[in-house]
Amino acid sequence: MAKYEVIAATGCPTGIAHTYMAQEALEEAAKKRGISIKVETHGQSGVEHAFSQSEIDQAKGVIIAADKDVDIDRFDGKRLINVSVTKGMKEPDELIEKILNDNNVPIYHSTGSSKASSSEESELTGSFWHKLYVYLMNGVSHMLPLVVAGGVLTAVSFFWGINSADPKSAQYNAIAALLNTIGGFAMNLMVPVLCAYIAEAIGKRTGLIIGFVTGMIAYTNGTGFLGGIVGGFLAGYVAVLLTKLFKSLPKSLDGLKSIFIFPVLGVLISGTIMWYGSVPMKDLNTGMMAFLKSMENSSPILLGLIVGIMCAADMGGPINKAAYLTGTALLAQGNYFFMAGVSAACIAPPLATGFAVLFNKKAYTAKERSAGYVNFLLGSTHITEGAIPFAAKNPLLNIPSFMVGSAIAAILSYVTKISVPAPHGGFIVLPLVNKPFLWVLWIVIGALVSGFLLSIIAGRQSQKNNVVATPVGNINVGSEESEPTKEESNNDLGEILNKNNIALNVDVSSRDELLQYLSDFSEKLGYSTDSKAVYKKYLAREAENSTGMEKGIAIPHAQDKSIKGSAMLIAKLRKPVEWKTFDNKPVDIIISFLIPDEDNGSNHLEYLSSTSKLLMHDEFIESLRKAQTKEEILKLFK
Image (cartoon, rainbow, N blue to C red):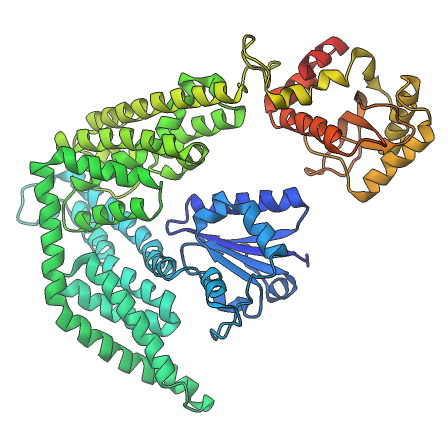
């Protein structure tokens, strides 16, 4: 079994995008450091890549980047960092560095007896508000599939007419009635499941049992999802309280406690409180729903503005989820208009990124353009998270741009009285929308506005950086009239590369034979006086850590007193040779650096940095592969 230096768990409430984006970010950060990592994902399809006890025991530390319960108690005795899934996406390098090298990272103890200071304890388990959010989102993540299933089935039943499930109506249809009934059962489980899994995150199995009963009382008494939330925290903390009160009982009675004492007393205490607390909660829930419904009629523009800003504020985060939860709660009560604005505001941002890269292709890298095109598909299916990388690139300007488009889409949806009876699915549920073409038009208009703003911002940013992502063969080129930046003037690759330094169709059969060829080549060109010494330095560098990269490229380098001055050598091989690389593929393009012994490191590191930046662009690598002459290759690097 493989041994991992670091293990991590990621999870978000919906389990669709954030979970896997955080996973990828952490894996990439570990890969850059040469650190082995295993990431356990808690997505909508369940737990994947689950840790074995052996993997937990052997790991140096644990990173939890999740907004849902991931069973933290199994990491008892391990160095542990617990943060939101957003931090896992945005700060993976810092988290890897901290878990490996920060001695202040505390050891987690499931009994709560950590020796960490109060400030360290906060870092260990997350802030109080973060813990509450994690508990809440555990309930939401289990509730959402029920809402989607029930909402879609109920909506489909309306194909036969709005009263097709009513036996007294002329529109009555047996199939529609069946779909409506099944969908209704699923929707009715929303509050009990929400309540139960909030409680489960707090009080484990006992909390789950108490939470289901408390949630049923909340649902029956008409408290809505507010009652489910309050009941979940109530049931969970009642379970925790009972655990503490009966802690002194003999261990032989553990079975009796879990089967009899805790369920009976917990359901009695929590159920009684919820029963008598339902009246004010029902009034509060009814008042809030009535207020939102009145806004749909009296202030649709203001309502759309608020919903648009909320949905685009954090792309699937807590603010976005607040709007979405309100929409699903109203949906369960037969209000299909509110969800139209919420869905429109969630669909617009990813579509906007697609339009942005179409409007100004040169302002985006190939990877960003590909992501933008993919977002047309993601957005169409109501997945907002694809817009997050674009928002994170320049949040102070890009997030407000998303808000503008989302607000426009939501406002137009409310003004024109569009109804969407399904809580998810995006354009897939268009047959269920009362004005489908108009709804799509409003969303596209909002996305176009955001996309236009994003393209302008990206264009200005690329000009400011003097780096424009241009078509093949013109990577990292600024305006001809602009002055070179300090960085460009200090590490110009043209200073160490000329046509004679490039070799084509080099015929070698192994890595070491290639390194010998480069050593001889360096002496032949007059850059070194001792090819054997250079060859030994090449081998020593490879023994220390392979210089094989990926996509068939390696960057071997040698530093020796026999080397007279910095030089760059390029070799394209006739046949690929085996090399230890990130993607485990052979190498056929060599970019080598010769470094004089007196170089203190700054110069050659700048040249390496410039080359690495070029190799981040797929267009550059493609151009390099297509280049047939030394002149073409030289032009690419200069």
